[in-house]
Image 1 (spheres, rainbow, N blue to C red):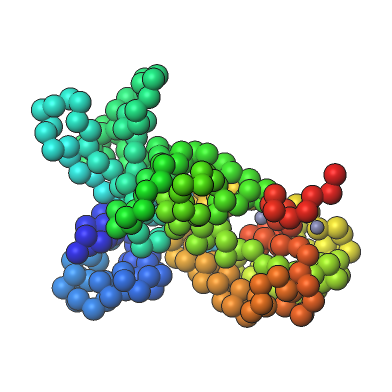
Image 2: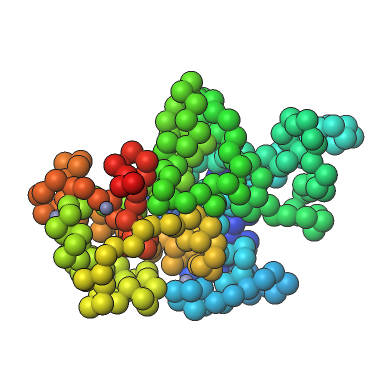
Length: 309
Ligand SMILES: [Zn+2]
Ligand SMILES: [Zn+2]
Ligand SMILES: [Zn+2]
Ligand SMILES: [Zn+2]
Ligand SMILES: [Zn+2]
């Protein structure tokens, strides 16, 4: 199983607790890790975050456990390296791939040297991360179509994806060349995470902070939203605009894998309970005129919504 290679590679950078969190976060991983006890033992043998002393470590923003850069959440986690078919041929490049936010699809990651360009990159070539000369290349380069997807689409610059203002632009409608599918298969896994954070609300619920009041308490307790989201103060204030980016949410906050998957589970459960089954309607039953972001409680105003000028 191809994912097992990924597991060995991720797990060599995990604590035991994180391994179980990871197992719980995906059915496929769960089956691989939990159902074959020999592989569980094998994998646990590789749990050695504490041995990663030369890798940058910081406390997780939520649980405060010291977590190294390899064990925290990344948007694009480069975990698989394949030497080129002919290592003697300098023109042939090795292959890099990885996973997006613990989603199950393996996606190739292209270095600047993989792209055909009029102005070839002057940056050093990407190396085998095991060699210690460079990498691993998390959150860098260009994301390509998942390996098991037959659709085609252009690769996306990961830096641009990380910096995209998700309050103004949806990943779903990005790279809108009409000959490609929407959302782009390249962005399918990222969209799973960015789209679930949005809830539709009516003007009345928005203005009276009902949504905020009802929803903030359970989410705040677990995701430790910023302290300025004080309920009493925010009720009468106009809603701020969402300007969340994947970089601010996933990378600037240093978050361990377990806390990341807890956050995602809380948001998904919350959305299941509070989203009106009819699209376009608030949970109270009225017509929804606004979209709130569950990451920041700001209002999402994508181009498709009417803009006040
Ligand atoms: Zn570690
Ligand atoms: Zn944590
Ligand atoms: Zn409402
Ligand atoms: Zn936001
Ligand atoms: Zn509005």
